[in-house]
Amino acid sequence: MEPQAARGVLVEKVPLESYVPPAKPSLVGLSRAELAERLGGIGVPEGQRKMRVQQLWHWMYVRGVQTFAEMTSVSKAVRADLEQHFTVARPEVVAEQISEDGTRKWLLRLPSGLAGERAHEVECVYIPETDRGTLCVSSQVGCTLNCSFCHTGTQRLVRNLTPGEIVGQVMVARDRLNDWVDRETPNGNRLVTNIVMMGMGEPLYNFDAVRDALAIVSDNEGIGISRRRITLSTSGVVPNIVRAGEEIGVMLAISLHAVRDELRDELVPLNRKYPIAELLEACRNYPGLSNSRRITFEYVMLKGVNDSLDDAKRLVKLLKGIPAKINLIPFNPWPGSAYECSDWTQIEAFSEYVFNAGYSSPVRTPRGRDILAACGQLKSETEKLSARERQALRAMAMTD
Ligand code: SAH
Ligand code: SF4
Image (cartoon, rainbow, N blue to C red; front, top):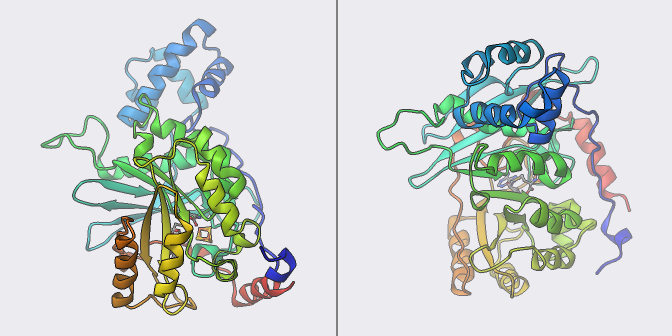
C-alpha cells in the first residue's frame, strides 16, 4: 500500500446543518417505539399505544393515506388530537418529469435549517422494467464526497436526510404512481417493487437514518418491500460495510470503478482513506454473503481511463473468491464533466471478458437520459458549486 501522503489529501465536505423539524412534525419515518412515545406525549394511555401504533403504521405505510381523517379505525377523539399536533406529510414534490422511456423523476423540496439558505432539493427516480419497477432513492442533499465523474459530488451544500425524508421518497412514488395497496389494477401488481439507494449522497455516511428508514421500508407491516429487493450502493465506507450487513441486512453494491489504487484515488477519492485491499476485505466479511446473495460491483466505463482488457483481467483477479456480480455502467456525461463514455465495442469486449471468467456482467442501460435522470446525473440546480469553488476543491485535493 502506498503511504497516505503520496496519495493526496482526501477532501470531504462536512454536513453543514442538521434537520430542524417543523412546528407540526410528520409521523412518517418514526420507529414503532418513537411513535408510541409521541402518542404518549399527546395523552394516549400506555395500554392503547401499541394498538394505535399498529393502526397508524397500517394507514401510513400500507394504505398510504395523507390525512388523519381517513384513518377510520382510529377513534375520532384520537384523530382530532393527532391532527392538532402532527401531519403525515412526505417531502413536497416541486416537479415531475416523465421520460419518453417511462422513467419518472421527482424533484423534492426539503426544509433548510440554515438562516438565509433556500430550501434544499433532492431527486428520486422511478425506472419501470418488464419484470420490476425500481425506485432510486437519495440519502443526502448533495454528497460529502467528490468522485471526479459524478455530478452530485460537485454540489456545495450537504445535509443528511432524516428517516422520514428517505421513507417519504418511497411514499411520494407510490402516491404519484397510484401504487398503494388498494389501487385498482387489472392484475393487482405493484409498480414499485425494488429500491436502490443510488440517488444523491453516500448512504453509509448517513448510517442511522438509512438503517431506520430501510427498517420501515422492509417491514411487512410497513412499506413491505423485502430486504432482498433493496440494494445499498456505497463508494466504500469500509468501517460501515460489515455493520450495514449486520444492522440493515440489504443487498450490497460497491462502486469500485478502478482496479488500481492510483486510479481509484482519483476517481473515488475516498480510496485514499480506504484503499482497494481493505475494501475487498470488508466485502469478504459481509454478513450473509453467498452465491445467492452476491455483492454487485459497479464499474463505470470511462473511455481510455479504466476500460482496457488489462483492467478487466485485473478486476476478475481481484474479485476471486467473492460471490460477485459485475455491473458495467456506461458513463453518463454532464455539462463540464472531464470524461467520455467508453466506445460500445470496448464495453462489449470488457463485458465479454468478465462474462467468460464466470461473472454475470450486465451493462446497465441508461434510462431517462432525456430528463437527466440517469446514474450520476442527479443534482439540484439550486446548489451548484461555482467554478471558483470547484477549482479550490481540486487544488485542495492535489495538495499532499
Ligand atoms: N454514493 C453512492 C451511491 C450513489 S451513486 C455510491 O457512490 O455508490 C450511484 C452509482 O452511480 C455509483 O456507482 C456511482 O459511482 C455511479 N455514478 C455516479 N456518477 C455517474 C456518471 N456520471 N455516470 C455513470 N455512473 C455514475
Ligand atoms: Fe457521492 Fe456516490 Fe457521487 Fe461519489 S459517486 S460523489 S460517493 S454520490
